[in-house]
Image (cartoon, rainbow, N blue to C red):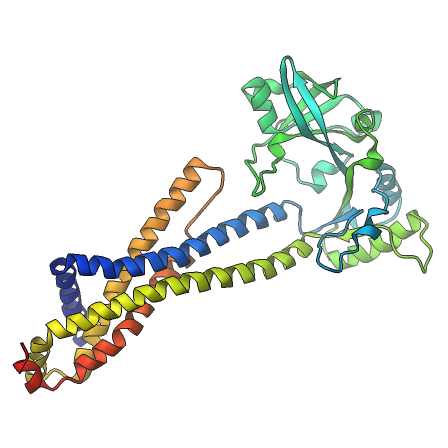
Length: 413
């Protein structure tokens, strides 16, 4: 009952303070609003950015090993001049790997290069062309909205066929369904469309499968030299096989295929998505900390404004405090009353800041392809920070009010 009475009286006093002193209250709430907006907007932006990047990394598959020329990563010890001399993975090495009894669900080649794509008078320059082998659709979990994937015979025979991204189909034909069995030109060579990929949307860095053309690797040899493309051999682990176990198997097998002597260094890299995720953990840990500190400095200003309005409130209600204490109100009652009021004012300011952030996320998500979302975790964090700042800001004026002598307080003007 005492707690409910405290809440009621604190709410009434806080509401009266807001109504009767609009300008002062507005300035005080503005400090908290700006502070919460600064800290939560930064965290929301970072969380959304992180989600977008991690979702992109997740499409690589956490059980897939990539045999490549370049190791993922970087830093001051990245020996790029050594990696530059390494050969690119070749389609022929896929067949050699398949000859070994490896604990895998699938092995596939993928090589990317860029070419001009045409349909009638419409032309797209620098389109990403992906040369793939049999099994790529299973290792990559390729999502085809209409049509089909290549057969093994079509890939080995180098048939002039293609699977196009949703964006290319929309650009050329207006409707992705109309793209099937149409002929386009890639670098001047006629190609028949047999499939359209599901719409993916823009990636976090603007890259998207929507603007990709997938062709059989043996047909791609008529478009480019496969030794010069950005290539990888994707190997998907069998059920119950860890990535470390698979990497051990692939290390020995690839060294045997390339006839690397025991004392020689491997001329290939074995990459996996966990390498990127580990780097992302470190990067976003630093970014989150920096964003929190920047926002915290902003909210400190709001805390001082709340403390100021509470000192003024104590001054204006000194006579009332004296009457309450004369009627038997304990010191803790007066203390909690002002603390609740300070927390209430701060939470109101914080909620306004969160509402502004919500409007920002809706606007950005509606008018851009970047998915910006205010998470429930950040909402709770914003309210919690607001209430904490309110209590910390109000503790000194509340303590001062609770220690007032009732006789002196009643006689004050």
